[in-house]
Image (cartoon, each protein chain N blue to C red):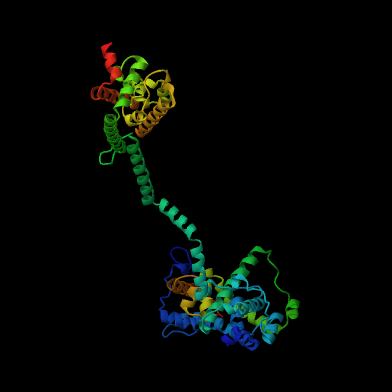
Length: 175
Length: 320
């Protein structure tokens, strides 16, 4: 599929989109991106345009794709930090955006509990845990994306787990 | 409440963290509860839910992506944004690395400057530069004779020695020449008498500046303007050091015609020879050089008088 996409085959792009878009959207959502779906489309379109420069197999492609996603999420976070805080979308806007509003609302409620826990972590701990779990990357791949040694990544994920565990015990959060 | 009126739950951060092995950490991240670790069951549940979000509803592709799925990327699509080109992905491509190497080579002079600056920034670099400057200063002072450092070649002394050797050779050549051209010598003697009534050897020997001036006159000029002075005083056309030049000119007898061209030429040549010698004595004052030349001239004149057979004019003079 990767080779076909590099040869500019439309079907290959579609297959790749279906394979990676849910994980990218989940990562963007768990990182608190303002428009996770839009960000996902943006990331994948940019990745397709830069695909001719990529060299490697599909495992490496996954790592490459989440590097782009991670960079884009950081850009989005910085941009929003500079902008005036916007009000959250109204239910009418949700209807205009399309989709099953009830399902999305329930999903957001579930995500809200997880995100409340993840927001208590440091940025590095959160990045490492989300890349490990949501992006399904190895320690070495995560180390490459966040620019830290594998040992540091291990320590970060261990400390992140311990912090979440303490919150459970402290607040009695049930998911 | 504890003795410190703090609820135990408020001291969570003080409690030791649950010790987890690497395998247990991996189990929790996979959403599974490790064996005999029921204390982390909620933690494993959290990551199971988080993992499940990957399978949530897939976003809808926008119009651009839909066009790509239908027709592929357009030929004239704009380049990808900078955040879409991870640096480590470029590193995996050998071609950009070679290109980067070529670009590095192009900036090699700048790199050398940077390396030089880095070297100068270190203590060793500063010491090297200081040592080079000190060596150059000492060498320069030694060459100019300001200081005398043992072990270094003395250029001044070398030059002096060379000058003396040349002087000796010139003297020998002068003597040899005089033996071959006795009439000219005689004419020179007559010339001497004609100019100031005394032979050159009877003049006061050079003893400093005054002697230098005398020597100037005797030798045909070793000073600054000695060439012209000698030409003005043709009677002094018997040079000391550069005798061959003056003798070879065949100076005419002493009379008013002494200012004729041959004598003038001889004086000029003698003057220029003396100039050359004077220049060779680098670093010495002109007066000193002139003094030496004067001494040489006196000696030479004495020798000439003693060695040269007296001519008719000389005998007449003695008889008188």
